[in-house]
Length: 326
Image 1 (tube, rainbow, N blue to C red):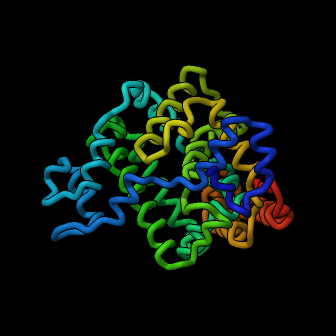
Image 2: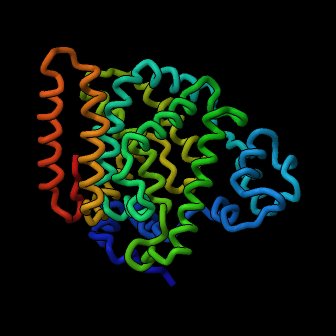
C-alpha cells in the first residue's frame, strides 16, 4: 500500500502531474531517512559512544573499534565502497574553482541558499525544535563554513580526508537529531514525514550547488561548462557520502533545478521560525559580512537598508505553495 504524502505538504497532485515519476519519488521519500546512519544512532557500543566509535573508524577503520556492532560495520562497508563514477581529479578541480571564489560563495550561501531553504517550514522544523534555528545563526554559518573548507581542501573528499570525515560526522549527527526528535515525542509524522528526509537532504545539495552557482553568476562570477560540470560532480559525491539515495542524489544542473522546483512546489511556505531565522541571519551575519566587503563610510547604513528590505520581503512572503523568502 502506497503511503500518502505528509498532510502539510501542498500541491502534491501537481507535483506528480508536472514531474511524473520524479514527483512520486519525491513524495514517497518524505517517509525515508537514512537507515544506515539511523541504525548506528540507535545502537549500543562497548566502552564508548557511537560518536566516538565513528570518529575512531574514520581515523583508522572499523576494525579499530572494539566489538564494533553490525550497524557500524554496515555503514563503513558502504562508505569504504567508493562508487566507480567518482573522479577525484574532478573533485579537486571543482574545489579549486570554488576556493578561487570564496568571498562570493560565502555571501551567496547566506543571502541566497539558506534564505531559499527557509521558504519551507517543514524543512526547518528539526532546527526549530532543537532550538538552533534562530538562536545562533552566525555560529551555524561558521560551522557550515568549517565543513565547507574541509570539503574544499585538496583531496578533502578522499577516504581519510578532512572533508570526507566531516561529512560522515554530519550524517551521523542528522541521525541522532532524528532519533532525539522521535524519542521526545515532538515530531508529528503524519504532518511532516520523517525528520530530515531524503528530499530535503537532496535539496541541501542544491543549496550548495545550483542555487549558489546561479547567485554567484548574478554577482559577476563566470564559470566554464567544464568547471560547472565538475562542481556538480563534487556535490554528487558529497550527497553519496552524506546518505542521499541514488534516485534523489542529483548528478547535474537539471537534477538540481528539478529538486528546487519540487521543494518550492510542495512547500507550505515559511513559518514564524523561518522568518525569525532570516532576520537573524541577515542582521547578525550578512550585514557585517557585506559591510566588510563594501568600502565607504556609509557602508553600514547601506547594509542596514538592505536588511530592512529583506525583513519586509520575509514578512510579505505568503505561507502557501512555493512561498519563498528570497
